[in-house]
Image (cartoon, rainbow over all chains, first blue to last red; front, side, top):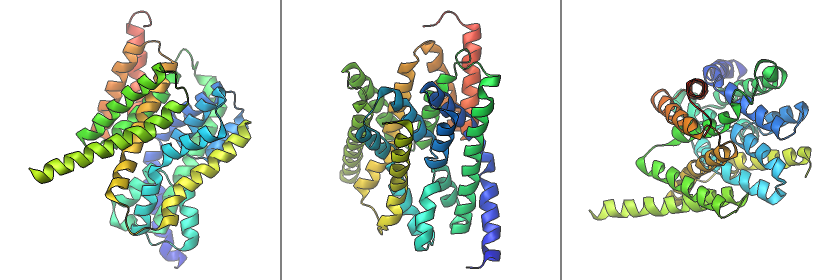
Length: 233
Length: 102
């Protein structure tokens, strides 16, 4: 594979996610606020953006820190939050020709946005585009994290500005973006109800795990039932 | 566990999640498994949203209105940043115009 062949795709990938990466700014701010509230220092906050590189996971981890959650709870929570990456990997391997070392490198910087933009067009389905897009988004995310650490408190009174609301707002916006059918909306409502019931029952940090495994199982059951109904009618 | 240890465990865990599909290299996943994986982010984001709302319940009525607004924005435009920043702006306006916290 020649570098002069790779470069245009790499540059196109790098440029194509820059407008999307701007959306990361409030997410980075939400993460930094949550991390500072959890007692992390600037180095730890940036280290998490460099090594985890996932807004949802980073916010989930910092929310678990003050609760003294166990390692097992942490791992199970992260696995259930990121289980869908398994499907992304399966899909990308089928669409993008990747050498063994590219299969090792690609997952480190994979995000929902990168997967979405790569499969959006046939010409994007190559490693150079994928790597360009991944590096672009990674640099932007870490840049936004650094800016939020350095300047966030200088400009904004977080408490007065109600910036803690950015976390539920972020999750809600992500939720809406993954809706594809009426059943998806039903499952979201069900997840909210089950979460509320778990909280009322005092299940604490187990709530997320129960919801993340139990509710999708119910979703699978309902979608299977709907398919059987459609086949018989 | 100290924060650095927690970050290291989380980083390894996340990499393994991201790399699992690349390592498995299956020709295709079963429809049941694909359906399960499809519903996982929906359930998780719903739960995380409620958990975060419960932690800071003041101005709850305004926050619910704001979520409806942000949901409409992202549904129509697919612009995440616009929905989050716009949502926050709407909350500030509602609090500025509205009454005491609920």
